[in-house]
Image: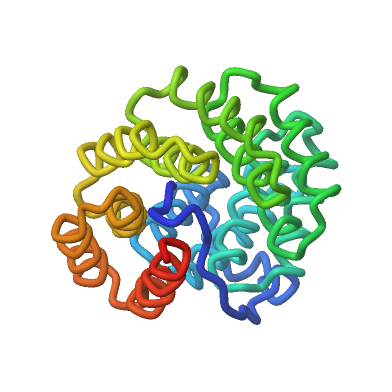
Length: 250
């Protein structure tokens, strides 16, 4: 599931598969049922229940790469980073072409500043599915962090070509274009990101910064207000960014 900031939310989880016994599983229920229940629990924001369901699926079928992949995602949502990586590793061992496991493990490696490991995972994911908008988008984000802006733009271009409705890709290509000083092109991308997702707080913030640099202060203030209304945690980021932009323009 895409997030509006491109980053996940993390926490701690204590439930382990080894705590689940076969006696606790009803005979009529099978692996597919537990996978279905786990995915539904994760979708409604209950990763703890999802972990339990995926764990039961693993007890029934220890060779289910899908169960390890999704349990890893649930653990990732709870910031059990070690548990998530362990599950993604298991998924890859069971299915070396498990695209999602490479992408998710790459995300965690990137967050741990292991850029080499993250790049290796994204590259492998794209070898498996070179037409994945998500794969190109994630690699583009990493290239931005590595300050390889031109290659990042190439990946965002590819992601948008594959999925023209990818608001996150427009947002981040807009940021990349802003870094290169192409403010009007950046503004066009951020306009598109907002049009595609009216609740994309980060896109409003980024568009406000571009508008501020273009001297459109009133419009910029409207964007900043909208960003903070949608995501109050962005208030400090907006204020710091305004201060930096003001200093740059002196």
